[in-house]
Image (cartoon, rainbow, N blue to C red):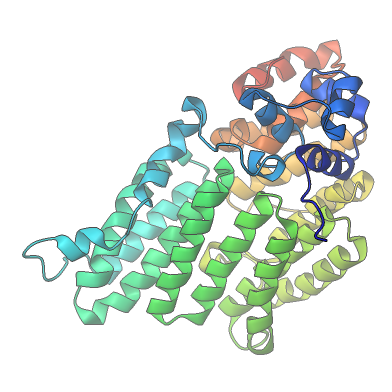
Length: 404
């Protein structure tokens, strides 16, 4: 007899315990009673309002689909404002326009121009300028899909490589929006375009983007599997032969390490970080191969994040104090400060947690104000906020859309 699939209550209980919350604490964070949480977890009470389900998922730091796979996934007007046009741009068959365009036998997009436009789009993503990156990528992907089929044959491999990178950039934005479906589509198309380009390392980089999409969705086992596939293929030929390939291998190991930490695998996470530090030393600082930003500073930043995931706030803050992240992109620096804020929050230091979040907001406001994990943290900090921090914290909560 097959085992019954997990219910909504089973999933809520699992993710609540994974976050280390009691029923009382979870109830307080979402404005409900302990009894209400207990009834949901036991299946006595149903959740029939999408807004309540979304609040619960955001507090548990998982997508709605993780709690209720059959729930309709429809973006609200607010969440759709910046990323929805890009989702529409990848909807449908990408080759259709090129296949039916009458009288078009070639395209005037050159390989050099394609790379220039992709680099410009990635610069916006790394800077967390989402409102500018979305329209740029929406136009770019359509143009490159057309050019990859109709440009002169000698140009097509290079344009396919640019197209793969553009889809990876789109996948990065979908991960920020928590849109797993669109992120998966973008990663899959990146993989296909990289194969057409004949670049194995670019294929692995696309696999890395898929793994990040799954990691952001809380699908830890799938994320580890996707990262392991890419790492296994690269490991035998990377170290000491091609610095760029080594960087992709290291980036895949970082996904494995974070997934292990979120799953509570302390030994596995620390072993992976130690292995990745060796790869980072081989790559060296100041590089951004395949837009991974892999290097010593990025690995050190991930070590902080892993310490936070494991609940080792003291270690996280000690590591953070010794890292120079000035050479990383605004997106990475802001993410680092969010992890520092989480570490301060674990130590019940609201003042320092708020200060770190405000600094992150100055660096990358769009990223911080639209980040599910930041909203969860702000909601946590609002519980019993002291008077000196109250005004700044409440202002941040308002900008993040968190009820104060």
